[in-house]
Image (cartoon, rainbow, N blue to C red; front, side, top):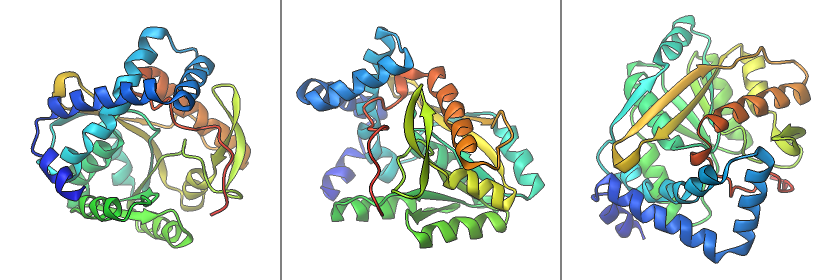
Length: 275
């Protein structure tokens, strides 16, 4: 599989997105459980038919583009909101980047590392290591690049994030990822209670870091990406349940900007498991 990934990484991005689009629709049509979850989630959010149908293919594009982003030559992108990053870095308080399962979250971290991380302010991204051994090796190799580090979803990983923020550096998390049991609270997400991580709010409140919202919009026909950055529109509450609800609302706002690129098939409302 590693050799296949390397081979695919040489294909043009438009072709990888085309293959991914087909995979997205095959998964939607072949899996009744996935399809039902997908449709239930878009119904909760009130997403129009044309938008969620586009999201079916876009979910596959996320997989299709990975060989290029992990192992291939750099993809093209542009920034919208880079001034918010620079202002936060100038304050030397550290940054907590919050990114939902929207668009291409790989490109957001890579773009930051290439523009800001190599200048001495690296980003540490929290991630859940894949279960497959071959995929763990590919992911580890692809994400170890100048200005970019990774931290596992363990206690040691959390300590790594805190250390980075206290040094005035940056961290990145997906706050709409279901946390392990005992590490979250129940908060509304598109009107339905969802078990929501408190880690992102705790990191910001404990370190005084700036919270920024970021996501990578996937442009059509393999023409690249737009990395969007905006400040969190509210001051985080010290109450974790309220803070989780605030972050969920912020994620909803980002998602509804481009519902065609959200992973509506993600099991957001599943019961959490112990670490």
